[in-house]
Image 1 (tube, rainbow, N blue to C red):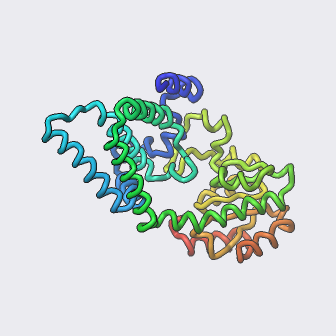
Image 2: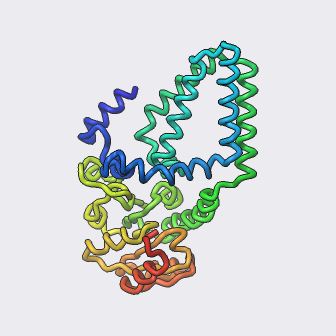
Image 3: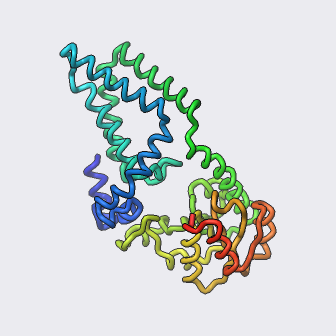
Length: 311
């Protein structure tokens, strides 16, 4: 299964690792630098998502199982190998990805064949060696995990809970105000696109374009991004949570865009609206997000003041 998936990727993308994966994971700067960039935020993500109590309980349970088996000299590596490999693999992905693929399953595809193989092997082990004590331990871990998540809310989840209604509202706004012929270049395209149906929402990085997916070009830490592939769509709205990318797009287009300045921008996203359609979008955007649509020079100055790093 893994070999088949990799052969297909190489035939389609022209590389063993698709360039969008290389770019998003910073692999184009080399494995050492990529690991250096990922370790701290990745481990922080694992800790904040699982919670300290879950980690302590999981480590203690695993240590007790291994130590107890070793003392009784009855430790058989078979039952432990599958779950240990799957756990190590999952932690490695979470750390290397800095948790970026977790919300809504983003960036999971490159790992999916291996993840399925690990889950399949683990299922076989469980089905063949299921015991009452093993089931009891599994239920205890599940109960403790749920309790830990309730007692130790993930800070990232709090941020997502703030962002999700804002993102959903943008999707609904596109659905209500958009025209069938309009195109929109949007970050978080999956979630916003769900609520924007049947409007045509395109990924702001251009990742929905086969031309970009198969073009072997240098990437950045924000993924593969080819501005001319996005601006040729002449999107009515451009939305992204990193305003320098919008600036790059506007520098490469002949169309004039105006910018939405709103207090929620640094915590949610930034929006640019094509000037020839401003009369249709100005009032709905200002009313929905309690902001003002201004000319680009003023807008970028205010965005920079609110978020000097861009996000």
